[in-house]
Length: 373
View 1 (cartoon, rainbow, N blue to C red):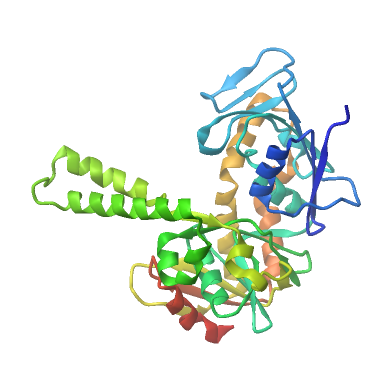
View 2: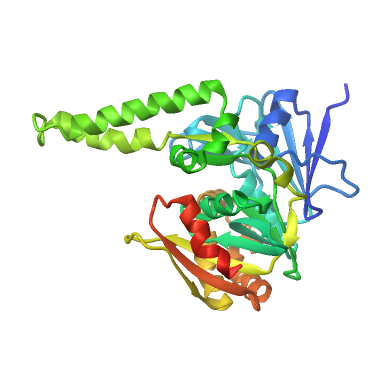
């Protein structure tokens, strides 16, 4: 029986081939990397083979508890999304090489470290993956980047509400010459307070998610009232509520497909890279926009991007413990390679530093920023 073949193409930068994937597994990968299925006209950079049972050569030796393991010749990642158990062979010494083949035992809800592996593959081929959002506004290509939770999505939403054309959110890929930026149409995380500022998107939320958000809002409100009730004071129940409330608040979001949010403003997910905004929050209520050198943006983003791949690097260190003779030069030198790419590609770009309160009023963010585009 011939195994099924499904292929994805990330704007010609990274090709991915699934072997033996079921329809549900194709949906799983598509949720992770977006609906970028296309027949490749070249060999894939990444092969993901799905199997019913992982073939074991020798006994598994464990690293940590339900984290990783290795056999005589294979390294296994044994934890996936939400810390669920997994069994995925990742040959870390092949990441960024001519081709890497991963073997996935069925039953996962997500392939661990897939985006990080795609990003490193793109980096090794000369492109620059950026943790960013991007859009085109009045013919000007804009990228908003920064540390996680810095306001990248909020910047995108603020300009999209004013007629911008969507390029991407979460990860943006810049061509080696720095002229073009590319996005992938992955779902966007929309928080409840986003919907308060942008009520036009509420109709795109499914009935079940609307009910969930309303329920969570009631729960959070009740917990906060109880926490502040004078009868509780500093009692143990009050302390438990104080700890639990932020956990519940972190669930007050939905994922929405960009085509549902933006419709005809989706665009082709490509634009020129003309201007950069480095966005971050601060403790005051004002929004400030000041010029910053592209060199400073590059140097700061070295460490933001380093933080984004930290989880993958922790597994690479486990891999080196298991196989000390199997080094990956790309991973060993990733910071240096990324710094050089950032300096080269962002070198002459007009750049601004934006500070805003959090949460920020999305219309106010546009009001403060649009004059600089």
